[in-house]
Amino acid sequence: MIEVVYRPIKQLVVYECIKYDRPDELARAVSMEAGTIKAPYLKWADGIVFRVSSLGLMLSSDVFAKEFMEGRFHISVEYAHMPEFTPRIQTSEERVIVPIIDDSNNELSLSLARWIKEREGSA
Image (tube, rainbow, N blue to C red; front, side):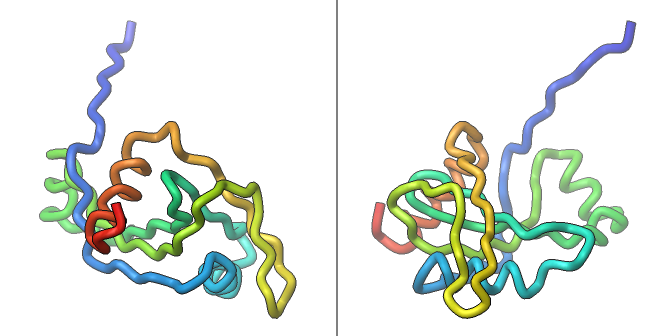
């Protein structure tokens, strides 16, 4: 039998944190940057709607691969405040509907949302 080992991320290292004034501005940015292969979406936790990105090429670097194996994940985050969860946002100009995933049961997402709020002094 194959052994299954659970090794969760221990630390998020945020190298970029971009705030949008409104959720629909974030949705617009996400929809405009999305390619034809991957549909745009956002996540929500604890009053924050957000998108997390990582540099996929970082894992090809020995340094970042070692960081990942040690439980540290380097990310960029874009976010806006959205007190109540809604399953979708419609962009104001293009009328694109961007789905939102309620990720409030994910410890990483909750920790990130709380960090954002603490960083702003709005926790």
